[in-house]
Amino acid sequence: MEGTKMSSLLAPRTALPPNEVLGSILTSRSVVHADGTAAQLHSETSGEECAAMYQFLRENPPDCAIEIGMAYGVSSLAILTALEENKRGELISIDPYPPGFDHIRQSALLAIDKAQLAHRHRHVHAESELALPRLISEGIRPDFVYIDGHHGFDHAFVDFFFADRMIPVGGTIAFDDSQWRSVHRVIRYLVKHRHYEEINVGLQKSFASANIVNHAYKRIQNRFGPSRYFRKTDDWKPPSNFYRNF
Ligand SMILES: C[S@@+](CC[C@H](N)C(=O)[O-])C[C@H]1O[C@@H](n2cnc3c(N)ncnc32)[C@H](O)[C@@H]1O
Image (tube, rainbow, N blue to C red; front, top):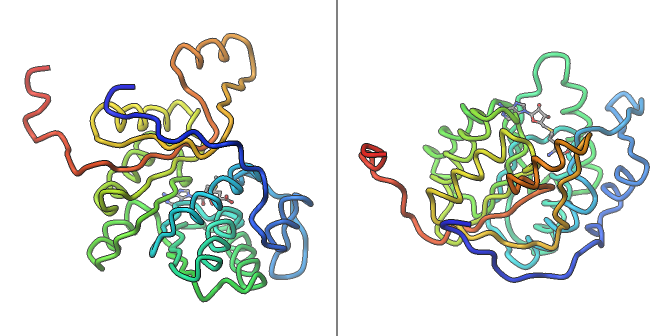
């Protein structure tokens, strides 16, 4: 991997964050809406990823964390549980919840409330491409950014662009769904053109695919999931004329 190196190899960490609300959502794979009706969980950060993220944040306690993409609040609960145990830090979750999806926002906020973690949490009800520059001008400087919002290449890249502007050297950016072609492209850029080191948080590499051809293609591209973590090692970025002669 050009420009990055893999840091400390850790044993797989599978223990879920110690949080009853999160545990019950993940084991039942269901969530409760504000009106009391239940719905099936979907598109969430997996139990293993939550466990790895929780452990990482316990070992690397942030003062401020940002997550892009809150949905039903699964990753929010994993992050907030770590912050609460650390006894420091706040989480800003960014998610626009388009019209028709407000019940999901309410369900996430309800779960966070029920877990008694709301005092460490703030939800920014906007698209990340608009919210992140506003947070920059407010002087917000997160140590950890989790990118799990709109998964199109342009959106994932813009999320990375602003996250990179916000975090200090030593800060970490994590990508969910790193095996998606769109997200992988952003990671390839980061690896090749920025100074980050990949952190092994104990997650098993997966090239899982719907068919054998895709599986082989992913292996050739070294395109794997689930989440991948990158720590910024210095502030270098290509100057504006860097690509002139390529
Ligand atoms: C995969 S889900 C997030 C799952 C969540 N991290 C969890 O573990 O439960 C993706 C979320 O991104 C949100 N999203 C879509 N476009 C976005 C954007 N432009 N900015 C921020 N979030 C966005 C969607 O509303 C959706 O809730």
